[in-house]
Image 1 (cartoon, rainbow, N blue to C red):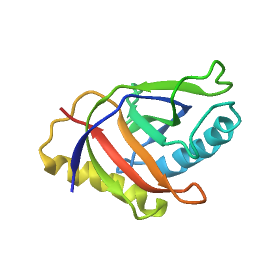
Image 2: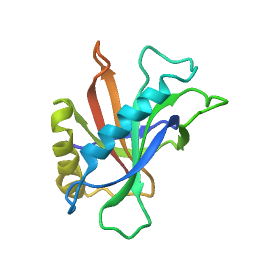
Image 3: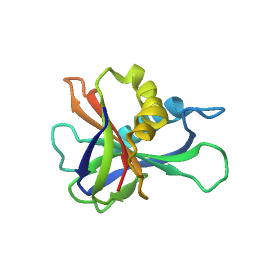
Image 4: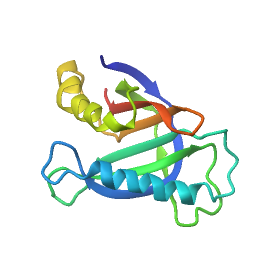
Length: 159
């Protein structure tokens, strides 16, 4: 079931890479995105940042301008309250507040790609909601003792 909420504006510190989205020939999202999160996290946790016990991880994605079918840019980052003076090898991304249609995924990381594909191929189109310009998001939250998120919100910007 799709839900709608206004997500707050946020500052992220992280890194980006291109990938081919699920449902397209040569889809490579899980591999590219998994490696990106691992590499970016190593760099992020070396920064001298004041942060909560475990920051909120957010993946933001948008289509590239390459013309390659299904190619998208994925930004993997952690929410910060203020941008540090030095990002070392990382980048920053500002997300504006806005309305999002979303579903909650709580079945573990192994089945996340199936939830993402179902959200975009079935749930969102059948909702009748009109998309607006903006980045699609994956919000990783509710980490367990090891830091693994227990809930992932799959979200698309809507009017």
